[in-house]
Length: 190
Image (cartoon, rainbow, N blue to C red; front, side, top):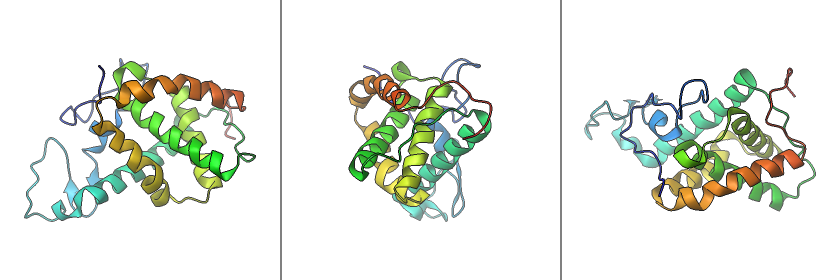
C-alpha cells in the first residue's frame, strides 16, 4: 500500500524524474524550512529542547509550513504556470467550503503519495482554485491553513489515506475542468 514519504527523506528530493515535476514533495521540503523564531528544523539538524525555537511546538510549525505552502502555491501558479481557473462565484458557501476542503486534501495526498502524482498543470488548477475559493470565502492565509491544510496534513498520519483519497484526484480535476478550468498553460494571467 503506498504511503506518505518518510520525513527523514532528503529535503531536496523531487516528486519524480527531473523535467516531469518541478515542485518538491511537501513534507520533506517543509521539514527544512527556516522558522523565524527558532532557526532551521529538519533531518540535518539536532533539535535541542533547551534551544530557542523548540518551544514553538507542532502547531506553530504546522502553521508556518502551511503558510509557506499556500504562498509557494500562489507563486508557482503565477510565476511558473498559469492555467484557466473555474468560476467559483456561483457556488453556495457550503459547496465552496466542501470544495476547498477536498482541494486541500487532494493537494497534500498527491504531493506525498507516489501512486497519485499529478501534472504541474493539474497542480496549478487545484492550488489556484483553492486560493480563489479562500479569497471568495474571506479567508486569510492563517485561517486557510487552520481550517483546511492542518486537517489535510493530519491525513498523512493515516496509512490508508493515500489509497482512500488519491483516487479522487482525477475526478476532482475533471470536475474543475467541467466548471471552466483547465490544465494547460495559458499565455496571460487571469
